[in-house]
Length: 245
Image 1 (cartoon, rainbow, N blue to C red):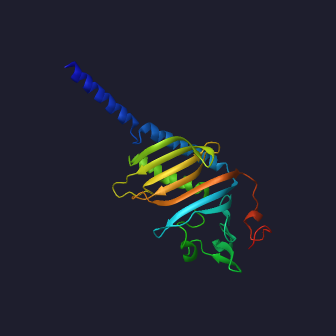
Image 2: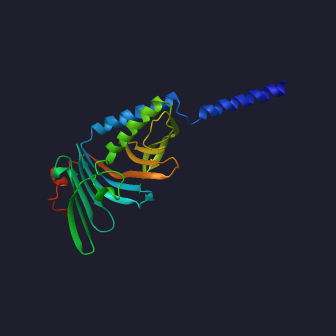
Image 3: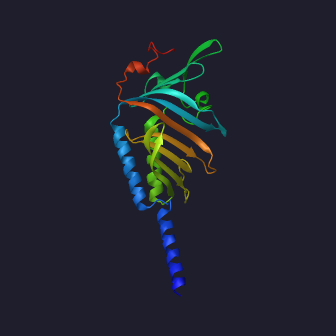
């Protein structure tokens, strides 16, 4: 009898331990994640501009494209300069409210140097990108997190599989990995997200999103981040003598 009771107690203890270790988003985990998100948004609100090396890899029309490496300048409210690193020279500028809200794009190659004014949501730029140029930077990642995580927590449709300290691009970071299980017709941005938050800047420096088959949809990351560098209008002008427009 005592042996049977002992076996039962050990089994019950094991079940409690497994339940405690379960990745399902417990209330405490959810509150911690929402608090982290609020602190990230507060930090981002204090930023006027930044520069970074931006890495992007996307699946477009079921094809996983090669990773691109880009030098990025960003100034609020929405001013963007991008210069591709590696390969023929390629640059782009977008300033919200200027140039008829078109992207100034420049590319050199095959002996030619061409500059275009392109609709950011038009066919030319959409052909090789999942998003228009405006969907970039820390604000974009924060928006993805803000529009998905609270909703999923509210409906108990999120499983936090990992949340804790990690390293990312050689810096101390916080990792948040979560799976989304929508019901009742709700949809989420991705089935699985892996986010990295820089511990010093408390900003989202990386996000990878996966579909229902766990195939990579997109991966974005930022390194060599420099915040509030004092970028000026000339940094987002085709007249900048350092640019090749």
